[in-house]
Length: 536
Image 1 (tube, rainbow, N blue to C red):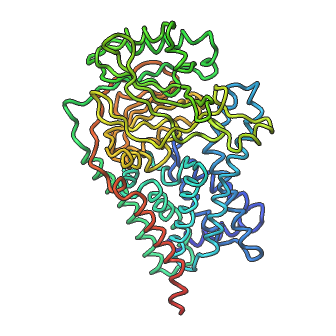
Image 2: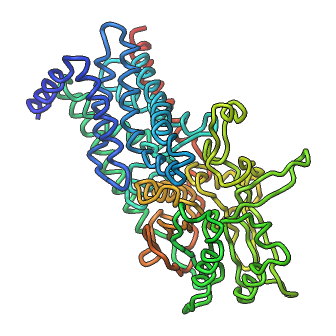
């Protein structure tokens, strides 16, 4: 084993002999880690993190800090280019107006996000000690910048390193204890540990190897134990129907298609069922119209919806709506609306949820005036950008357990549901994620979005219902698993009828949030100063 490790070290030293080779290795490291995420699922790609640690160690001797930053940035460029390339599809929906932005969007998004990885490897280089303990310092430095990526400005926690594990699998269950950021720290420490083995004396090598193997076994054994102890189903569980009409985003906003799209949703919603659904769910922005105009007096849609809803059934649909702002100006909201048939006829609005976290450049323009002068605008099919809704709270609707809506992008954020429950004074019993993944076509984006949203179910111990116009839609249990027969892939039209899985007891993460992650960062910090304290 020692000879094999030394041989591998020699090969890497040969590859690192020239600057262009080191740059290429950095790009390869980032690409390899990205391949661990769905839909690829090549978990050995996580060993790219070991290569990245080694590149950080080898940054020098001239300008070592600049070299470390550049290598980290290159690794991040490879990682994010492969992770977010699907964003170009959104600009091709209206290629005549936005197509020219597609390559620039990918370059600036991947290059901008890569700055976090550059900063992480720079921080590692600044504070890393010698010896095997530096693997924990590396884990802390990279996990810290991943947390910053998910929180500063609007935050964009897409494909956190710890979310490379398939949601619903054994290792992903650790998120119920430490959250996605804590799992990121554990994943970084585990995957990067082979990098410190060459050059260690036999005893230290055994300790590091046994620790890494023990952590891997613990992730799988603990996860399997949790999966085996899933909560029992309820006899009186609510029945949900998810409607997936398979409406291509390129066709959706043509005025002549409104009636066709409405008819499809209505036809699918009223299909016969073995058990009448308690709630019917249409995805984000289901109809190509502002809901206020669609249901205005004199138009036929409200009456048709009312006639189609059985007594007591709730319809929850994603829609664009208009409100009056503080300065008598119109505000546009990305909204989830809950209806039922009123006793006197027509529709009764049971609740509204206005999206709180908006997508930069997709739903609003940061520095809007300056960006507009450059010829840029957001991708929304509205006269103006969307306005953010108030801080979220769970919705309590007649005949249904409390639900926390997450509209599209909001499903990326750990603690979103838990904080909303604390704000509203009631814990949600399920999560509803409506999303318009039709923007991203048949790319990896919808599959990754599904995986990321499923982590919110694991963290909070709550089932999650996911509704999209073109897939992937489905029902996910409190362990993050897609329910057999209760999901629909991309490019298919139909409905999913399923009993709502039961909620679990509040998880440690739902109780303590990112406290375990903060303790992990303290461990990393302690490892960085321990040699200095020993010398003193």
